[in-house]
Image (cartoon, rainbow, N blue to C red; front, side, top):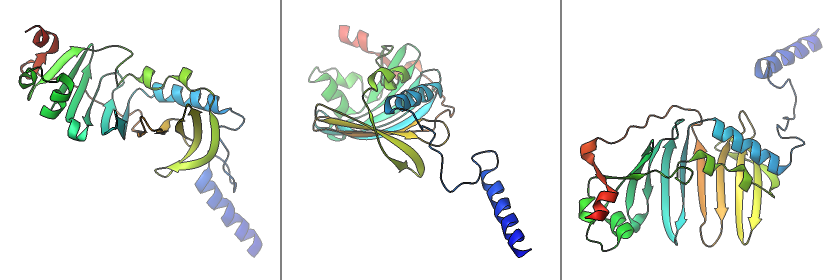
Length: 231
């Protein structure tokens, strides 16, 4: 009887922990079993795009200078965020429909515009310009292009913020890119790390599917870049 009670107790624990999910086993099933690294990456690209909305934070180098980004993308394709280039200046950005807006500090505009003498017109204002579809920082199609995820190799699984992840790598011309794909739940990209002399960096992805509300700036807070360039 004692043995039976122990077996029953073990069965109850197993059922509570895994009912309807995996069954009771000491080994976790690999959700990508039998799939090539390229197919895993495509699955991740499709899932990440289909989520509609997500958040990205990251840091790296641009032209040899450190840069940090933090932005959110809405299901509509609109987005908003911030770029911190240290001595190169800081700028907020926002994309709403066919228009993109930038609001930078003095250092940012001086770097972007040089000594044009027009930077004083931008201070405290959002500068608007047409949004280039398929080329913007917030374009999910461009960010998760599966056509670029080729000739990958699967490495040993790892964890990203406590979540199990499949690790895929690509080495090309001295540049190594490591993709971390969620191995639990939806196969979203969790992190992408680039190792190279020119443009190393780390991008973290989160908040997939969470609502993001983007609102365009008020007209009195906006200046038109094309009009300023004409003057």
